[in-house]
Amino acid sequence: MTNINNIQSITQIIDSQTTKESKSSGRAQGFESLLNSALEKTQESEKGTQTSELGEISAMNFDIQTVSSIVTDKTDKLLTNLESYASKLDDTNVSLKDIEPVLEELNADAASLLEETLSLGEDDQNLIDIATSTAVTAKTEYLKFQRGDYL
Image 1: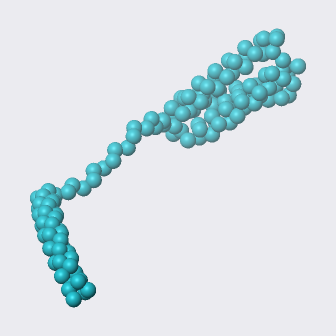
Image 2 (image 1 turned 180 degrees about the horizontal axis):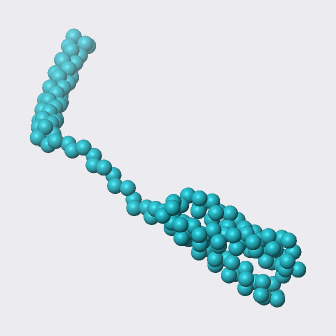
Image 3 (image 1 turned 180 degrees about the vertical axis):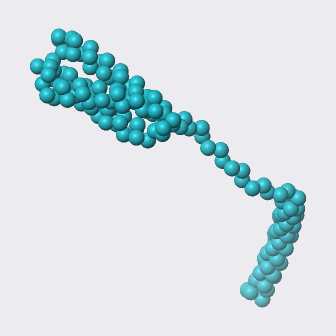
């Protein structure tokens, strides 16, 4: 009858499975205790160390121009363009059609310079005078060209 039901082999299999489970649960308990001790050490070290707040992020150094430096740069550019325009007028190989784009740029630069001079204060009166006379000269040359004085 023991052979028919095979009771002994079944009990042996069950016994071996319970011993395997007890060995693996022992290993799991060992891992769990190691994990808990590591967590406790980490928490203790975190309690001892205070976290500092983030410091202020420093801004990049930008080259900020003042209004007077902008007006100075625009005046210098306009004077350079006026010199270029004068040299093209003297050159007989350059036609009036070739000069027109240069003159249009002169007119736009003069208008921009006049707008910027409005932002200057009374401290920069000398700069205002120079910038205004340069812009007026450029506008005058533009009007002369449009009127046909150079034909």
